[in-house]
Structures are given as C-alpha cells and as structure tokens.
Length: 586
Ligand code: ARG
Figure 1 (spheres, rainbow, N blue to C red):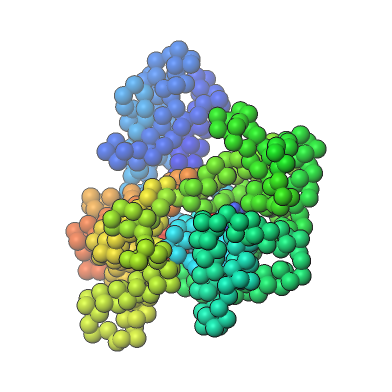
Figure 2 (tube, helix red, strand yellow):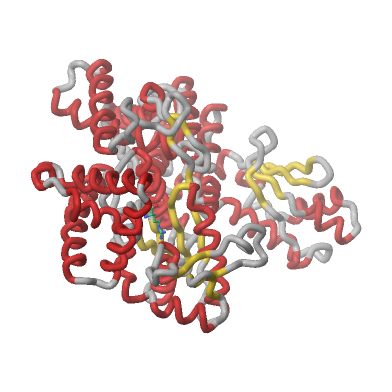
C-alpha cells in the first residue's frame, strides 16, 4: 500500500491504460481528492485526453473502468462511477480503508510513506533571523513559529533540512547600536538588563536620527568602521553580539525551536568580494550614482527600482550579504532549495534577490536552487491595528508568553481543580505556548490576523486547547482500558471492515492525511494541516459519541480501537509537525 493514495491510484489507472490501444502510455489519469459527496478521489484525465483524440469521453472512461484490475479495486470494495462528461469518481471501500490504516502504525511508518515527497532534496530553511539588539516582540513570533513548522514538515517528508538563523548583525541597525553605545550608554542599566539597554540605545539613535539626519550619517560611519573591522568597533560589536545571543537562546528554548546554524550577516563579511566582482564581470550589475546596482528590465517595477548591492560609500548591505549567503548555501551545503521566512514587507527584496541569483548562476555552471519567500502578514490588536501595548510600545515576546501561561493556568485550575498545582502548571505551560503558536499557524500566513486571548485559549473551535484536549481524551480511553495507545499487537488481524457511517467518515478523513501533507508542503502553508487536524478531531468526536468502543463485540471493538489509535497517531504527528507539544492528560 502506498502512503500517497493518489499515487497508488495513479499507478493502477496508468497501468490499465497502458494496456489499452486507445490510451497508450501518454495518458495521465490526473487523480485528485474529490468533494466527499461524490467520492474520495476523482480521475479527471479522460476528458482532456478524449478531446485531443476526438473521441467520446464517456465511452473512453467506460473502457478504462472495465480494464481496471478487480483484485486491486472492486474486491477491496472500491467503487467507481463515471460522472458528468467523463470524470471517474472513486470511492474507497471499507476493506481498502482498513488495509491502508493497518499499514501505518507509527510516526516512522508515516514519515517513511511521506518521504516520497521530498526525498533527495536538500533544503535550507532561513527563519527567525532577528536583527541584533532588538528585544523579541510579538511581531517576531511569526517567523519563528512558521519557520519551525516548515522545517519539521520538510524533514518529515524526506528532505534533508538545514535550519539557519540568519541574524541581522552586520547592517544598518548595528551601526545605530554602536553609535548609541558610544554616546548614551547607561552602565548600570546595562548590568541590570543588557538587552533592554541595547534596545533603548538603538531606539534613541533612531529617534534622534529622525530630527537630525547627521546622526544617521554618524551611524553609517560607525557601520563602515565595523565593516572595516577596526579593532575598537569590532570588540564592542562582539560584546553586543554575546549579550544578544544569550537573550535569544532563552526564547528559542521556551518555544522549542532549534537551529543547525546561526550564520548571521557578519559571517559573510569576507565573502562579499566575489559577489561584487562576478556580478560586475558578468555584466549583471552596473554603476549608478556611485553605487553598484542590478536592474531587472523585464520586471514592471524593478526596471526602474534597482537592487542596490553596494552602497556608494562602499559598504555592503542586506542585498550583498543575501547574495553571498545564497552562494554559500548552494556551494558549501549543496542546497537545492532555499526557503526564507520573513514578513510581507520584504517581498520586493526577495523578488529582486531571486531574479539576481537566477541570472547570476545561469551565467556560471552553478545549479539554480528553488527559492521560496514564505512571507506573512501582521498580527493585529483587537482594534484592528498592529498590536501594541497601551503605552504604544510593541509587546515583548517574553511578556506575551508569560501572560499566555498565566491565563492558561487559570483555565486549567477552573476545569480541573483537583489536579496538584505542580501538574496544573506544567499543563498550563504547554497549553499557553501551544495556543500562541497554533493561533498563528492556523491562519493563512499571508493574511493579517487579530490576536485575541479569549479566542486562542478557547476550548471550542479551531484552537490548540481544543486539539490538545481531543488528544488527551483519546489517551484516557486507552488508559481506562489499560491497553497500548500505539501498538496494534493485541488487535491486528481481528478487525472487521468498517460499517457505521461514523466509522467510515472517520476512516476516510484519516486517509486524507497524505494529500493534506502534500498540499501543505507544496504551498508551505501550515494552516492547511491545522484545518485538517481540527476536522479530524471533530470527526472523531462524532464517531466516539455515536459508536461505543470498549464494550463492543471483539471484532467491532478491534476495528474501533484501530480508529482511535490512528486518530491519536495522526493528531499527535500533525501537531508535532506544527511544533506544538501534546499532553497525555489535561
Ligand atoms: N534580519 C532580517 C529582519 O529582521 C530578516 C532576515 C531574513 N533572512 C534573510 N536571509 N534575509 O527583517
């Protein structure tokens, strides 16, 4: 049995067609998931094929259906129906469903099956990547949470994933911090809360710069000194970097996020020369007002708005380091896919970067990687504007996470007052963080969304508490019966095919896991998986309310236990792929 049922069906249909004179091996059956009212899958390929051959599509569809092997389909209860002008609706039968579900007993089995999607690919996921000397704020959460999930998903689906934190430690913001440090440092404040003080310095220079552009010139001069590695600047910079690193690490730990590398912009400081040289020699860049720039004449906007790769004062910028970074990832890591997770305001930058890399690499013998900008919208407050504290400052991430935990604790205590405090606290920590992450992931990433505590902590609807509770509830079924929630050993072979409408609906929903995974990793949009998990949990509830499990007759009990086990496995696996920790008890 193939994990990707679309692939299995594709194979069966293609093989049957290849044996028919009317089709031959050119034919693509085009298997897709279908509207559940009509079937589980649909073969859409006959219609366009018949058009090309100028034959009657319904008749052609009939020939194909007759030629399909009974042993693979009809005998397993798969029904086929020709609909409309020549679509073939495919409904999986109870035996087929049972057989498919029996095959996947563990997360490893699922990953093994899913690995066909990205096998042999080497993908860099560039995420979080904050600028030094800024506290992490609410806005930073999206890149971390979405990036972590994408890294897990790609890894699960067979890719070799390299997680890279491309810290902004060598650009304009750094010049401002250095200037602030020299001019306005409050030693005492630095000792008390270093990151707080660094952020104050950065903001101060920014504010002064708005009134007096000379300040910005000075900050730029600081940056040039740093980029020339003048000893006093460089030493200061190292100090600042170290402070920053410590603060970041705490947040990453709390959010259960990890990286393989933290190669910030500074890492590429000695790798920029080839960028300037090659782009100029290959005539991809040109000089414009003293700067080195790349125009993209074929693009409506970038034909007049150039990609500046070297500023007129000689300093490198965000574009330069990103070009060097792309080169490094392809040459040193042999990456064939580069994924960048940042907010939507950077769309122009990445479009220009991708166009430039494509032109550059295609004039050399380097392979062109597949580059994706996974961008996201803004988190809004309940007033519909970018989320802020009452005083107008951005909300600190660490404060937000603390508040999430506190609120979750109140809810957990209320729901289950008999639980020992220590246990409640542990549960609240998991629920609080899960709620924040899930609220973000469950939205289409390219939309803005409103951050609302009541909604994201609610036990109703498409939320983390609802899903975590569903998982804990299935665990409780197994602990009550004192049987393993994962190992089929005790029941396998005894299960009879599904019969009740609720069993069938749940089994069908479970088989939709593989196409959802394919769609999620194809579009790099975790919210598809969220929607699926929510629907799966809802389907499970309907089943569990309608059909008794533990007290049913042995063969019925076995197949229902199988459904419980697989729901648990798919839910836990899916939530893990979102970076959300689950609980056995709640
Ligand atoms: N440091 C940038 C920022 O804070 C994000 C970097 C994203 N990665 C990259 N390779 N450009 O906006």
